[in-house]
Each structure stands twice: as C-alpha cells, then as structure tokens.
View 1 (cartoon, rainbow, N blue to C red):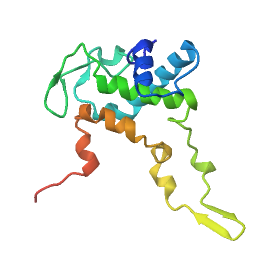
View 2: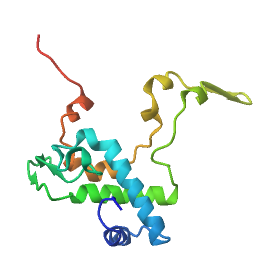
View 3: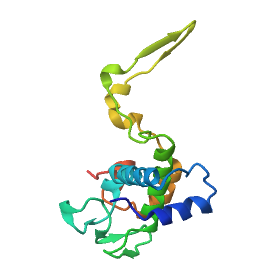
View 4: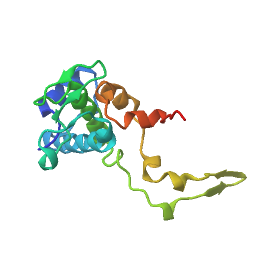
Length: 165
C-alpha cells in the first residue's frame, strides 16, 4: 500500500475527532487512504517544496529533499510531514463515504449551459474555459491542514506575479 501514514494512525486520527463515518473494513479504509493520498499529491504537488527523494521512481510525493515549511523549518528527507498525513486522512474519509468524490470525471460535452425548470432558468457562463479543475471540490479542512508545507514555487502564482518596468 502506498498511502501516506498507516491504518492505525488514520484510525487514531479519526477517533480523536469523533469522525464516526470512518467505519468499515480495514480493506475499505486502506483503499480510501490510497485514494486520499493520490488526491493530496494530485492537488498539491506543484506547491510542495523540494523534490521527491526517489525522483520519478517514487510513488508518492513525500518524502522530499530540500523541503521546508512556512516557518522555514527544514523537513528531513526521511519524513512525511504530519500535515501531509492528516490531510490525506481527511481526504480518505471523504473517499470512504463517497468513492470518487474528490476526483470526479469532467466532460465538457456534457456540460449544461442553460437549464430551465418551470419558470426558473439558470445559465452557467464560461464554465468550460476553466476545465476539469472547476468541478473539483474545495475541502477547506484539507487546505487548512496542509497549508504549512505548501511553500513550493507555484504558490506565488495563486496571488499573481508582478513586474517592475
């Protein structure tokens, strides 16, 4: 299993938070942990500092070389930060309850631009230009947990770039 953390750690995490939906077989939880880890990597890899210690042969994004947190503390190249593990446990909970919910398929051909029910009509404008990321859920608890290790170079792109002429 190439998920972040262990099943025992995930169980303890959810138990301490009273997440009663974290239930089922160990196999189902392990599969959800794998999908949760894949979600964390896919969503945040460009914002992680450094690079994977095993380069391209490494399945997960962590552990990483030359990594540090927002407080400028070095993260050892042998460590998967607590924030990465815990955010993957939160993602795993959502995947356990509703498999595939964090990575829905998106087909622009199936997008409704206008929908009318009785006298109420709703129009969605320009959704197609945003592409598949526009349909991904934003899970604030996951973003809040993982934020201290999002120090990679693409972080500045969120706020935009400035240039002096």
